[in-house]
Image 1 (tube, rainbow over the protein chains, first blue to last red):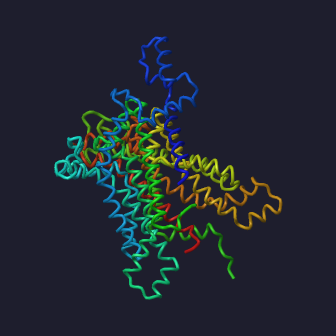
Image 2: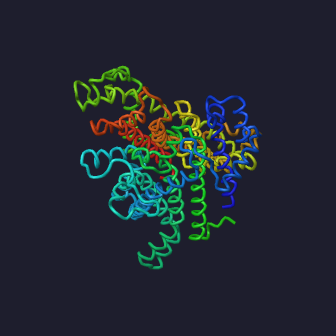
Image 3: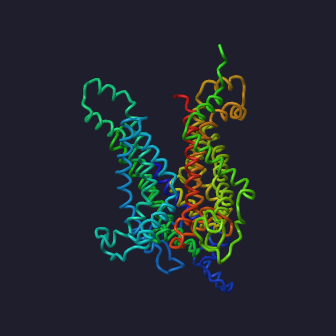
Length: 310
Length: 282
């Protein structure tokens, strides 16, 4: 837990460094190609490129901590605004995909662990491995082929024009755009959650206290409650990880469906060589990941005090 | 009394009895053979197309799997694409195993300061979701074959390092290491003779499961145009250019993705089987 802060700092350093691994002078990204030497020198000074790297990092960090992520080169709007809007859209998808993955994956994992080695377990484990090896962008394409091309049931791409204030998920006209991308996103997490839940439950079942409870004569239902409670920390860890991956890794699915989320924006930033936007997106998404893992750590300790690392 | 067989022979025998592993190995063998023997196996030239032959369905005029948006034969492009896609999937893992594995062994063996520095740096990279990190690095670098490979290798180094470090730390505690030190063996000799042999198993199992992920990720990078560039045949790239044509020949366009999937599953099956075969507890 105490590690979270230095890690966050390290993450910000990596994000800052992204500009410098780009080929050519970082100055080229903000300076028009026909500028005179004098103009270049002025811009260089204004952006602070003439200062040593460490100072540049601190200046950048200071701005970021005040919420200023710079201006997007491609759209001329503040990066924080662009990222904020895109983030809401990605969250809509994740809000649909994550609970589905959690419920289905958890149920599959627990069911498989109840009768290990039997048919149900083999089917579930097989399905889980299947799900994990599927390229989610390909699943998106296949889903579009089946549900939009062969049988025109659902829209192939895009998002419904949802009014900025509303949540926009509770009516069919908005929801229909979200179904296919959400399914594509949910497949891999479902497989991973199923596999991890199964492993966690089997792990707990092999512990001595379960044998003791059974010897005591406790009924199955109560034993199941105890077992699941003990398996919970591992499940929480996996779910948090998957949530982070969904938020950070949505670019592929969003590109297939032209869903205007952070992933799509990332692709846009890369295509347009829009470095401030790229930095901003990567920073926000990775911070979300760090915070998510931190919350998961705290939750884990809450559920199982033995995990306290103090 | 018959002499007992060695560990690796036992692993091989258990592996051969595992149906999933055998299926994975068989599929992979087919794919690798097709890739290696591409010039002799592919029916057409993968780079030659024609406007008239655009987007034809399965079986049209000798093109078993149809043609793509530039009239090139799909089957041939898939076979030649296997070369690129397999290389792009395996190479980063090999690189990450050497670099990350090496770092992990050093960190696990020498402990204290070396361990602290290496593992904390890895923790920072662990704080990024892998897709995001790969896309960010490849995107920032400009995108191209080399950039894609570098990005993927960097993404896989932290997990590889962690696995190697854990395995090494476990081996380090064993008595025979202490015995080796007592006989005067230096750190490097111990690593070479005792540690590497013992940690190679878990590292290889993890590496093979990582290849399955790497296939998806590298194809994903080329899908976004950040890795392989046209006209090189690569499954991810083919999928991205064909997506626009799904209204014409839907299932032809889905083919490259199927190839990615099958290859990834094969590696997954292989690594599962390898892991179970190497497990001495069963």
